[in-house]
Length: 318
Ligand SMILES: Cc1cc2nc3c(=O)[nH]c(=O)nc-3n(C[C@H](O)[C@H](O)[C@H](O)COP(=O)(O)O)c2cc1C
Image 1 (cartoon, rainbow, N blue to C red):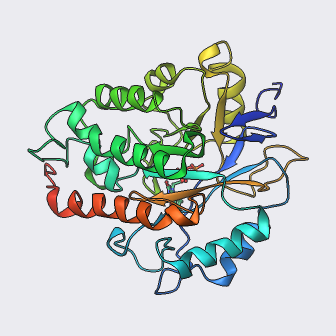
Image 2 (image 1 turned 30 degrees about the vertical axis):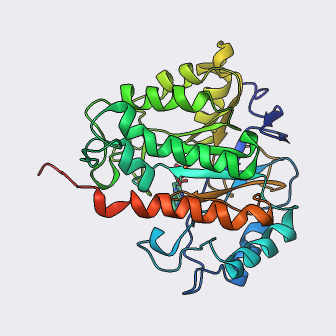
């Protein structure tokens, strides 16, 4: 099979990628107890920084002291943490190219979206529009903070059953979310495939039980879509060259492959000159101008504080 599309360039936000394979966000637990990425994190990312024109999305980085339930995950809300990230980006590129909001895999925004856990009775629960409200507010707040929607994106996982997720029918909820996000002019839309749940492969890992097609169709060709989860060299190729090839809608499809060792091509290797920092829960990163940094942080963290986990009720059916 020809690999013309998989290895063809792609405009993604303000950066031009040389091909359509990117490195997915991967939490590595390599931060100290203050959430500061330790020195080997710089090695980890620079090792993957050999080929210009490749996109790496960082591991989830936490945006407030209350944002984490896990130790040793890197954070990005105080000046020491930001300085440590700056060392990493300076070693590789000239700062982050954008912010990816972690709205997938059971993180806070996903908990708002999914009716299996959002039992709120205020304006943030009870209907499709209400459940989408917080994620959209956060996305808009970050766009305002960085003054450029092309530096912002969000990751969603409509099909995940991780941590008791998976609505009876996620399509209407996520179609609404995607259609509202589409109006915001984001750099790209990032969707997790049904093969994958959180950080574990599903039992049917090699089978795509449910497809993201309704969301891909809705998003249209205006900016790329990243699909992630369970791709091999063969299925990535099939997706770009066959499944989505005959449709204009998906001509800008971008695929994720997480394993640097994956042999996609004999003369291909991972590299990083472009990077989106994935922020977990709500907030921002180094693309925010220094003088706006503080207010953005306050705004986003106060949103998170007022509308966060304690107000959500789990309702897992036994
Ligand atoms: C060790 C590990 C850490 C992960 N950390 C994150 C993360 O920080 N943020 C995120 O959105 N997804 C995370 N994921 C999910 C991956 O980004 C990706 O969706 C998943 O690995 C499926 O892709 P793959 O089948 O190509 O590996 C993680 C997965 C693994 C295995």
